[in-house]
Length: 182
Image (cartoon, rainbow, N blue to C red; front, side):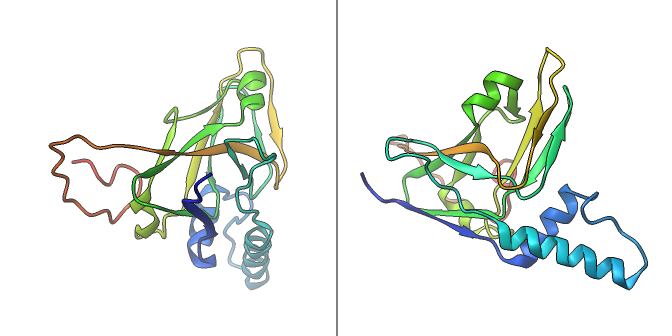
């Protein structure tokens, strides 16, 4: 198999921005200096515990992505996950993100954009190419999804792609979600 990509952590500063935004209950604002230090320590601990995506078996196509914090989603609830991960990949490849199969089957866990598309040039974006994944528990049977920090929740698959013969794209990426459309 061709080795075309490498997963890396984003910087602590970039992760901290996403973690604070996505998990305010983990980093609740107070005026106390001790509380500020506790929030920073909690964020630092989550960052240090981040696991880079990996395959479970030699035959797996998907790279499992892991949670940085505990989550519990009742039916209809969603959450934005700052993975703390970025992917450097060769030109002509894309990383597609899906929910883990078992979670989709048991809970109708879905990505809010149905499939995450991580382009190769996202790696150089202003946010360091930090991959965020937004999920919703679409269970119709009343099941609450509860996962712990470190649990696998999504999977990414690298695929090659082609371009049209008359392609004339010249734009350069600077941002993330929706930054390449007008």
